[in-house]
Amino acid sequence: MEKIRRTKVTDVLKRTDFGATVNVKGWVRSKRGSKGIFFIALNDGSTIKNVQIVGEDQNFDESVVKLITTGACISVNGILVESPAAGQASEIQAKEIEILGACDNSYPLQKKGASWEYLRTVAHLRPRTNTFGAVFRIRHNMAMAIHSYFHQKGFFYFHTPLITASDCEGAGQMFQVTTKNLYDLKKDENGQIIYDDDFFGKQTSLTVSGQLEGELAATSLGAIYTFGPTFRAENSNTPRHLAEFWMVEPEVAFIDLDDLMDLEEDFIKYCVKWALDNCKEDLEFLNKMVDKGLIERLQGIIDTEFVRLSYTEGIEILQEAMKNGKKFEFPCNWGDDLASEHERYLVEEHFKKPVIMTHYPKSIKAFYMKIDDEKPVLNGQEMEETVQGTDVLFPQIGEIIGGSVREENYDKLLGEIERREVPMKDMWWYLDTRKYGTCPHGGFGLGFERLILFVTGMQNIRDVIPFPRTPGHADF
Ligand code: 4AD
Ligand code: MG
Image (cartoon, rainbow, N blue to C red; front, side):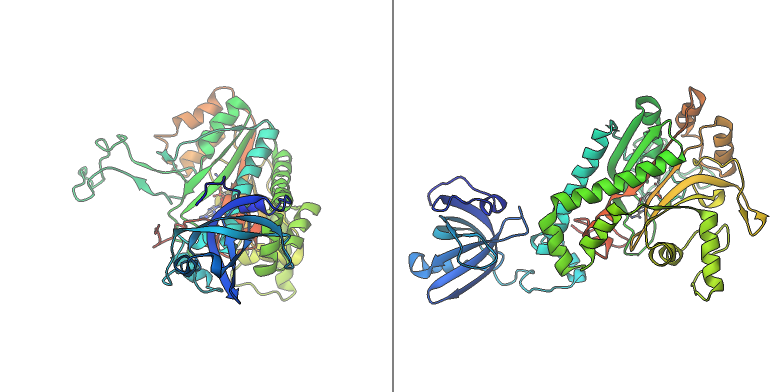
């Protein structure tokens, strides 16, 4: 076959120089034929759209035509022509076809309409479907949006370690990293494992968040962001949790709670707008096939001002709703962590808008959050201490962002670390930021997959990351 420089399908579909000889390569989505003519829908992943290849049986070896089956990989030389068919401007009249990779009928993506569950079992092939192609192209675009946003705003992309000796969230949900022989562990007289002879000479884990190192960077470079994988060994089998997920964590010096909320809102809107501007065809496909309200919802986010609400005000609204007959499965007394049904009520029923919730009880948030000067009052009664934490709650997703102003006061921070018995041995460096030229600062973490869920309208977090890690699942 004559060598002609390949044109991507996305580019060939934009060309109008009809009569030109082109080469396209890709995977056969479908082939049909009638009266000695065959039509191939060819996709190469560069776009949701297929290019139509038209050929006459008589011009090709029967043995080649037989191998043009769903899933097969082919290379086509042909003439770009205006298409008589509706829904496409151009098509390719095949002159030469080479089978690069045949595909027999054991191909797992043979049938249309396979369930999400089934497609997870063939995660190595599912990017070849329309939906997953769209999702992963959007995922790429969201990563670009994130870098673009922060770069424009003068934030530096800072790389924090994945292997760490500290537990940022203090929730004890870490995966250990060790080269020790698990069948022959050295222990002290109390049965505690001795790590002196382990690879790092101490106990280490995969990070749950880059925040602590991010704070070091913010208190020197001024404004930074991290964007990388994080790991949580929480046994949550929900459509919103992964054991390995990507998190975006900006951290900024000299900001207060209002600045932080402004940043959160502006950042999310920027990413959503990026999707609308850059992923039109994929979004139109998802809007048609996966979630009919998707594009309208995305547009709605950009046009809406997020509600800003204190935790205590949230509790008031929820208790008022219960008085008026609303039933919740879980209680919501001041001091309780809000269950997802409570968050959903506030976001989807009460406000019908994203909600940035603030000033949570200290007892349900992490040790590093700045303690509020005043205690809140509910029904005439003074409550416990609160912190300057913010969660951004989104329709259908729930918590998409968690962040806070950080406690910059050395004594207060140390007090919290001691009170909570956060292992201090490996935290001296973190406290040094408060010891040497401490400054007000804050930041947040956005769950990248939760953003992708929102932007694609997909229902399960396992379907917006190529190879999901969840309890019991680490295939591919
Ligand atoms: O609220 P989280 O635990 O906050 C932190 O880790 C802070 N250190 C962030 C910071 O202030 N720099 O997690 C942040 C976000 C959540 O709002 C959620 O979107 C996402 O990370 N997230 C998860 N996403 C998928 N699977 C999980 N298991 C997740 N846990 C948290
Ligand atoms: Mg959180």
